[in-house]
Amino acid sequence: MGPKPNIIFLVVDTCRASTFHGLLEQGKIPNFESLLDGAVLYENATAAGPWTVPSHGSMFTGLYPSQHGTSADNPKFNPPNTPIAQILREEGYHTVGISANPWISPGFNFDKGFDRFKTAYDLFWGGADLGDIRNLSSRREQFRALTDRVTMMSGAKTIGNIAYEKFWAKRFDSGAKKITSDALSILKNTADGPQFLFLNYMEPHLDYEPPDDLARDELPGDVELEEARQLNQNPWKYIAGQESMSPQHFEILRSLYRTELRYLDTQIGRLLEELKQRNVMDNTCIVIAGDHGENIGDHGLMDHQYCLYQTLVHVPLAIRYPDTIAPRNVTDPVETKEIYGALCEIANAGSEDVENPLLKEEDRGNQVISEYPEPQPSMDALEERAGKLDDETREYDRSLRAIRIGPWKLIEGSDGLTELYNLEEDPTETTPVCDTEQAERLHNLLVDELGELTDGMNKESNVDETTQGRLEDLGYI
Figure (tube, rainbow, N blue to C red):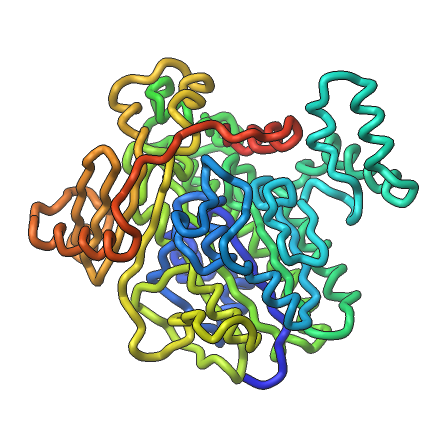
């Protein structure tokens, strides 16, 4: 493909394809639309997992969750193969990551292969990581560890980061403005050689708190902004049956969710403007992907757990690399884990045996798979947070996986669940189809690919106090 291009890998966390594509068609996210002009748009992209950790693990490795082993039971990223950032660094790329999601952070080893990595909670690069220090039993131990950890060079930065997280980090948004500013700083001060910039944006993740002016424009006409701001956005009480919510309630939440994406579009505009001013758009490959979708009342659920329906695994995906990858709309099913192979090919890096179906124009396989190795949060954690669970809610205590070929999709669970859907006739997966032959065919293909389905350990992972607080702020347990 010629000289190595700069690469920007932009993840829109919690972005469901139906909403993203709908806003594109309505002209409400013009900067994304401009970015996608001249791109390959994959209309039927499937995420490898329904939430952040397993999905990012797959995009960074090209493996399914059960193969890379990073999920709720073991959220630390220690894959069996070389992650994409490390491959690119070994090929001469300067690799930088910026993430608004506390799961995708150095604390969970997702900085593997990056020259520099920071979160949206940090004001400065290079401050000490203090999360584990806060868990020490005594002030004396904390002070001693802090003294050992913080150098004269990093001390001021560390103090600044602590103050920023406590008082300002979420003052304006969920991190999009700060992440974009950091990205602009990187682009303005690039080192020699190609750049790999990974960005994780948390809009439109819960809570949905978009700017007032955009929210008013998107809300139903008979709903005041103050009313919308006061609605319940706690998914766990609803899932546990402790909080009832009306169809209008969810209609309002969906409007706030759309508005979050419209706000993010303004920050993408800032990024594009810098790329254009630097005249590097033509030598920059930009990948846009959702890591998973969102349930907003769909299937009796909120947030992005406990199922593998299309609302969670159908995500936006596009690759823009002018004059090298022909722009087109691809309707064949593809997988976001294939981003790994595509980036290896674009950078002319990695092993020759890394498959790359995304960039093929023909002979692309149409089998896509998603996995949910264990529920997150666990039933015990959900009960602690939301109150006593009924038997119906406890049915979510299972492992899931799904396979789609053409219109047919099979979802199976470790508890014996089997649901078969024809997505052409039933795109919202409302009524399972009884077709034993078709279900058995898809089941056998799953077994051939991944082996028999087993139940996850469903244990709580150890998380330091600081990270636990960040995750709880986002509704994780």
